[in-house]
Picture 1 (cartoon, rainbow, N blue to C red):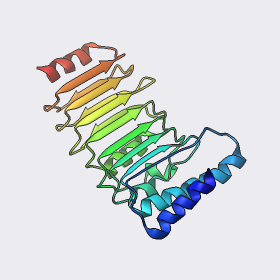
Picture 2: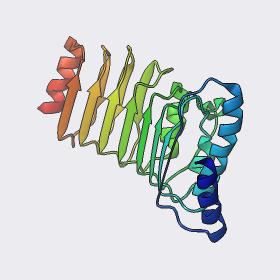
Picture 3: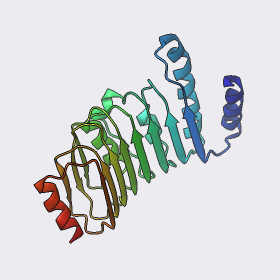
Picture 4: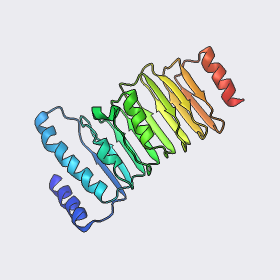
Length: 212
């Protein structure tokens, strides 16, 4: 199978065939030997997809450090879906990324901290849809200064503070155990769905403001 994929990707590279959507996934493996052989091949496939103007990128890659700087260099990228990458590069915490073409960003089961998340969001200010599911390493989640955001879906598996300030937001789904849920300046909100949420007095007051 790898040989077949290699041949296809090489043809796309040589003939510069545009790639609309590229999906890549691997089985989980803790075998360093397997990882050392597979991960460079994944890097090569990603490079070809990016060079050929990929627009939608879906990655399901366990135990893989996402080359986020390389991915965000793709000026044609519209949608990025990442599931299971166990880590982001440490340099992302203090680095700068820029992907103004990105409209949809989905992160599931990804390990990252608050600085990494803010760097990602600051680097794609034009996103209209953001999904964050069960990402470890975050003590708080802040969505601020997103100029075009319309839909947000967040699912957490532990206590994480949530702060959203988004005047353009229309749809919000949140599932988690946070006692600190702060959603403000969302005057265009049309739908709000909460699941497994502790409704404190502060949260109740916030909800009253949102629906009034």
